[in-house]
Length: 109
Length: 114
Image 1 (cartoon, rainbow over the protein chains, first blue to last red):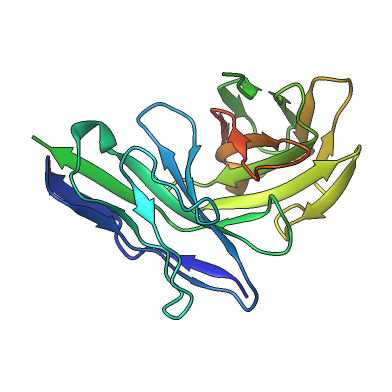
Image 2 (cartoon, helix red, strand yellow; image 1 turned 90 degrees about the vertical axis):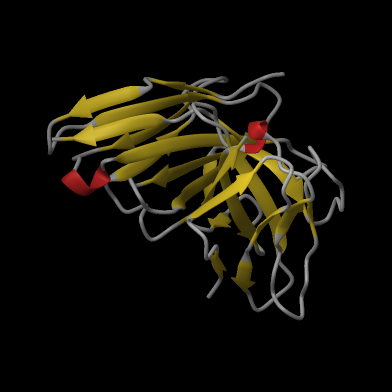
């Protein structure tokens, strides 16, 4: 069975500090991993895909198949990064995303 | 940027009543989805829809649920006889026919069943 685990419900960091959101998954095949973000009063939107290997808004995420992890990192958090972040997995059925429980990030000045 | 539109933003209904949640996906998208999030729980997949038929559905999507694309623009989720446990935020999403596998989500409909 596929499962996505985000162990932290809440992460509070100071502006300028590094932030890392943990995501672990279980899936028997080769998954596609995503990070979605939901800013206050806005819709869920895609932040990163592991396939793209890109950096968006200073965030990066590397798929570690050995540790079955897809942690999201940013070296210097900004106040505008305060949001809910969801890790999600897609298996064989494209569009059927398995979401983690989400991590609320609060960046304080 | 084009957006997925959902109406209404809030819906209150009595248990046992039928509700229809409406979505207008992005115009050139061909894949459509419904997800839901019960308060305090994970976002859960309900159903995917392509070429006027259901591609996949979850265990949650039982006989009381149905989806329809009645015209060229709308995509609806019908709950025939609502239960208290159907109270949730319902998200519609759509994706492009090819290329980048990116879901575009609507802002959601908060359904409250009393």
